[in-house]
Length: 89
Image (cartoon, rainbow, N blue to C red; front, side, top):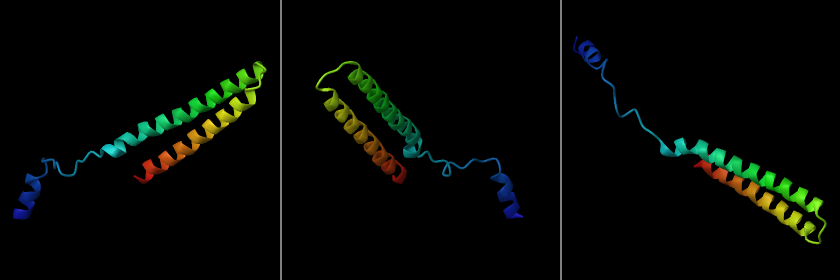
């Protein structure tokens, strides 16, 4: 009888120890969005530079394209490494 009374007494009580807020899990989604936006920004910048380099003929056009491809590669690789650390963390 005591066990049944204990169950009924604790039926309406909420336990605070089960509720925990993990801040790192909460911040993972915005970080994913920011990294994805960074990659999209680098792609748009690459397209813009390619259009400008093709529009205006100059000797530095090839160097600028190579620099932009290097920048895009760095951004993609850096973002993938960051995503790996976020997922594993």
